[in-house]
Length: 261
Ligand SMILES: O=P(O)(O)OC[C@H]1O[C@H](O[C@H]2O[C@H](CO)[C@@H](O)[C@H](O)[C@H]2O)[C@H](O)[C@@H](O)[C@@H]1O
Image 1 (cartoon, rainbow, N blue to C red):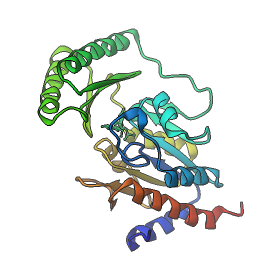
Image 2: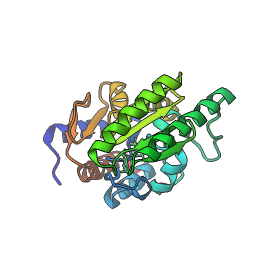
Image 3: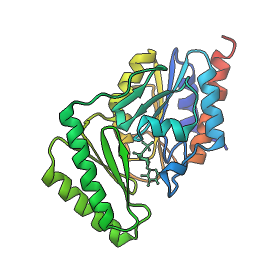
């Protein structure tokens, strides 16, 4: 696949940076959306490019996802050399054996009450499903009919807002997420940039929460929005297939710069 010239030019410049961080949203970016969240898998071309990029000198790869880290490990299949941020910037796996997220008793109590609310709403709305995470829960709407999904969305937002405080709501693609953590993917990019000492960052993603990541990109970084919708990203491609092609091109360009090291 040939990339549009402005994107290819930006990638060529980025490939020459001292230390490159390639940070990637997972669902809808590396992996196409599917009905069953547990069934999501990276496109083979994207998986290959991730592995190749992670093996290059002065190059780090990170998945930056709304999923819990455990779920991200399960579905992504990436090796330990790929850094992970889960729960929209709330969880990290920067090194093997890193301790899991730790919450206060008060936070754990709120997470439990949140789970009760979402499960009650799900029980009243056929086709909806709860996904639980360490710091919150998500109500999936993708498999409910349109009317049921809209009602579930209204009910769950109203109940969480009225019954709990200190909650961050994150509406996503066919999902309503709630967490006791206010972290964002922007926080994740800042932390990862610092962790690897990146002098240049590539980021791509398809969802609303990816806008927090695009917002913190600096001059010379490259942000690519996948699919339709308003975005802060300077570049856009239509699909995860197109992102896989972008990553393959980045392997080629970055390999030419650091391949001999
Ligand atoms: O930040 P991401 O990696 O994009 O994670 C966002 C949410 O992705 C998952 O849900 C989405 O993808 C599912 C599989 O394609 C799809 O069925 C669902 O409708 C989407 O909302 C994941 O299940 C969530 O936990 C993530 O927060």
